Amino acid sequence: MSRTIAILTGGGDCPGLNAVIRAVVRSAVLRRGWRVIGIEDGFDGLIGTPRWRELTLASVRGILPRGGTILGTSNRGNPLSYPITENGETRLVDVSDEVVRNFRSLGADTLIAVGGDGTLKIARTLQDKGMPMVGIPKTIDNDLRCTDVTFGYNTAVGVVTEALDRLHTTAESHHRVMVVEVMGRDAGWIALESGLAGSADVILIPEIPFRMEGVYEAIERRRAHGSRFSIVVTAEGAFPVTGQKALQLSAENNLGVERLGGIGQFVADEITRHLDIETRVVVLGHVQRGGTPSPFDRILGSRFGVRAVDLIEQEKYGRMVALRGRSVIDVDISDAVNALNLIDPEGDLVKTAEALGIMFGR
Ligand code: F6P
Image 1: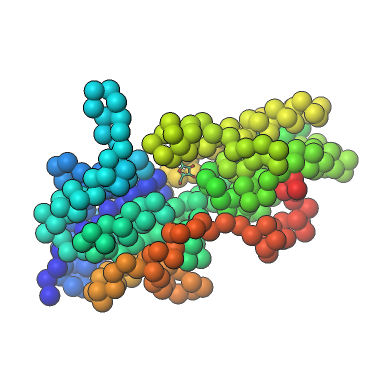
Image 2 (image 1 turned 180 degrees about the horizontal axis):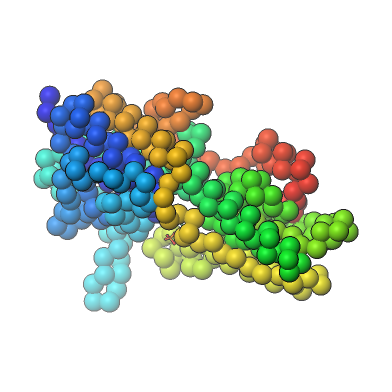
């Protein structure tokens, strides 16, 4: 049966999105002779005049090593609560019916939504309004449930690990404390795993509210053992026992999404105030999300893309592809998006880090 399927990428970009797009197109076109269209800029491309393009074998040629997404994305376009500005005033409006209408007008029968919990939640809701869908989990934050890992995360951990290796040599030469702030929103995965791989001395994560005294202790202990420098990795969402998350913008002032940032500076300022040691802050920011995907993310993205097309052929809608052990499986999207995948403070990774002498400031 000849079919037309659509694909969109939503939320923050991450390395491996193009691997997914390429895999979807190749398995739909080469194995089934289906047509694939790409919606531009996430759900934004289905609001107003639809923005989309044909995806042929030629349009996905050479994109496997490319970071970002050839389709564009948006992490502000929730059609269930879409910002419309009139006469200088912005209000949030539900434009989901328009999205479904536009989707149908393109002649596609199913949507592959590639995104984090926000995008997948929206897509699942739109399915109930008549837009059959299959989800593919992506995010550098690795905070989605029901999958062992999301693609994009492995690349981000690699980028941070390389940065930590580089920061070690300059920290050691100048006898400084380097405080490195990394992404991850409310999950500490990037901080924990890159901190382990990059030999951090202190790791601060949102799952373990920290005491500054614990941080001072770690630095002092190292000094007592002859190490005159320290590396502190802090997740952007980490916060002190007595305080709150550091925000650049609150959800109210940023269309419902908090913009995190600033905890690294706070920690560095406190260290400078309490210890006689020179301190610098490095905020790695979007470097963690940009650039070429690691081999792991290229392969995982490709596996997810191929499996999503299989699910459409089997008419298994409302499902999300996932990695469980060494196998790609599919799960009910609602199970994946109802809560975040967070680090267990008493789990194996944290225990391993503590056994290695890494402090969490507890
Ligand atoms: O969710 C991915 C992520 O990179 C987070 O780690 C980070 O907090 C956020 O997106 C940054 O968003 P933006 O690209 O809008 O600055």
